[in-house]
Image 1 (cartoon, helix red, strand yellow):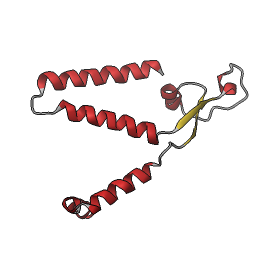
Image 2: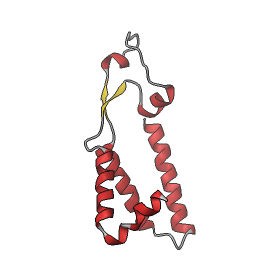
Image 3: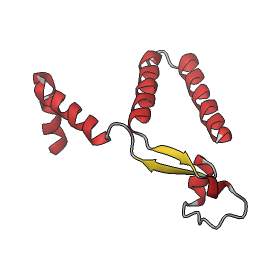
Image 4: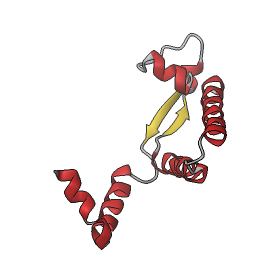
Length: 114
């Protein structure tokens, strides 16, 4: 949906401008890195979609079971086909194994379980 994505991009621009103008102690490079990392995780782990011809027809007999807010965000006639390329559970498992293997990060799981 182009209107929804334009709204998100406008909000991101406002936050970036606010961070550049008013904040001296916050590193904008780390925010940009987090944004790019989020895009990467979204592309790898996000669901894929397909266009349904029957859902796009005006007098279709196919029933749309999706809620209205889903349709507002995704668009009419698009249905999820499945999961992403890499399961998110795999990424979390790799991150946990990396933290456990590093001596300086071994404290983190202990603190999380307290």
